[in-house]
Amino acid sequence: MDYLPLVSLMRKLALEAGDKIMEVYAAPDFDVRAKSDASPVTEADEAADAIISAGLRAAYPDVTLITEEQADSHALRASTFLIVDPLDGTKEFVQRRGDFTVNIAYVENGIPVRGVVYAPAKGRLFYTRADGQAVEEMGDFEKDRAGIAREIRVSEPDDEALMVVASKSHRDAATDAYISQYAVRDMTSAGSSLKFCLVATGEADLYPRLGRTMEWDTAAGDAVLRGAGGKVVRFDSHEPLEYGKAGWDNPFFIAYAPGVTLKA
Image (cartoon, rainbow, N blue to C red; front, side, top):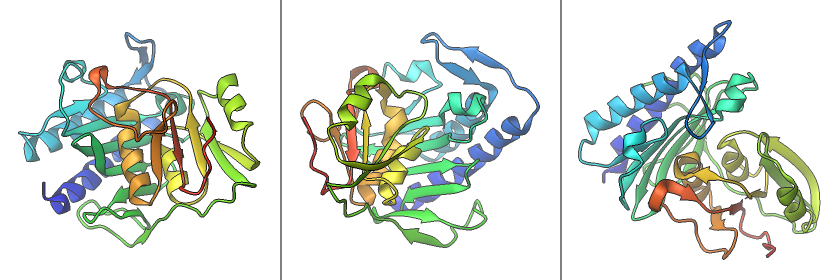
């Protein structure tokens, strides 16, 4: 895979999808339906999915494409594939909280090696460059030309004073019990894959997730965090989180900056 055109296209499609999402977000009202798993879906999810899928299929017709909104793709199996969550954090979108993202990633041999995370309501754009380094782009986000971007890097954490980020919509007692094992100086909450990006930029040191997620929820953020020197491991074994699993379900996991001493 030639990563340069891939990253350029993923970035462009994420921005185009973000524009469509914000059109719906700005409307006085929009329809919200429940999917078969009871999770919400809106016209913004579907419109963003159509934009991204069309662009990726046109450029990479021979690469398996997995998207949250296309159920027929969920039965596929592959170790190398493109994976998309066109609107991660639909609950945040519906409640107009702003913590939603567009996620596009390329997984190679079970590892998310390149990814884009765009938070249109927050005006934050994170991605891995062709060389694998994670960056946050500043500016007006022109579609066809990348702007000024700063390389991002995980923190050098102090185990006696950790900054922890947790889910805004899926916080539970088990997560709180796990976090209580650490010496925490402060906590913040965020929705969607922004949590990975906060660890990637050094704004947080640790993000544990003791709840159900799917690979399209995590792959892009995982790629950005890896590109910033971070790690994502299984909660049970502390082995690296792998992709291409049957059903696309993730186990519980921990995302963190190396230097954090993980608890069992």
